[in-house]
Image (cartoon, rainbow, N blue to C red; front, side, top):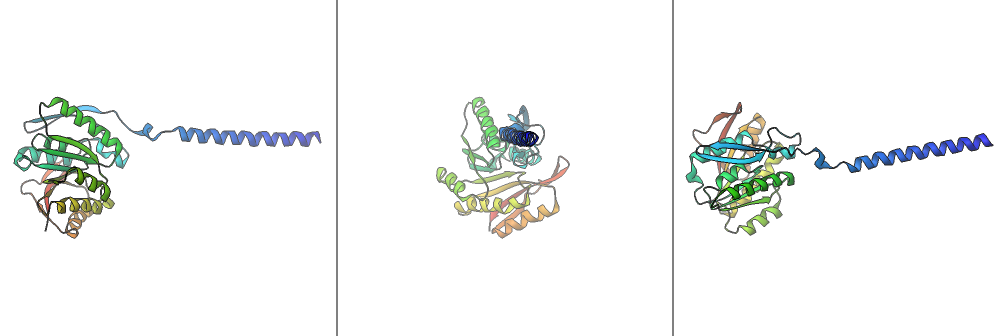
Length: 255
């Protein structure tokens, strides 16, 4: 009987140890915060577009998280900023909303010409660095138009409506730079663009700096625009090579 009792005690102790180990493992898992994996090693970087010099914080290399691609400056943003710096009359005195603004490099450049600029992104981490760059820009400019950041997830009607309520006059331009990465996001992108364009009854246009990475995406972007009742025009002379990829500026309007 003593041996059986000792055996029972051993089983109980082993079970208790395994239970404690599992609880410790669970506690370890719970203690891991998602922010632990977020790269915040931003560098203050200088960019020059024509005669315009911008200083802003960004990453030097891409995150492994698709949602955090906005932490660095992509080739399409360089393409669009070079185009806008050479054609500033497009922006002069206008109201602009940018989709997928990332660190804010395009919207901040636009603020030197526009009366109002709204930068948007859906990711909280990206919005944080965007707002930091807006603050940096506003502190260095003696005068600047309204420059704000808003959360906007493409296809989210509530968020679109909230932005339009804050800006009842709508926008003259919708901008997008290198924002066509994921096929599933393209219909949502054009749902959003259509709402913004129709709010202005066709007086607004969408300028997209597109960088070709896959033929299927090339076709999808054009087809989706057409399905949303839009006309896509390639801006003459803008097709060029950026970071070993083919880039182009599209001007998209409602039919």
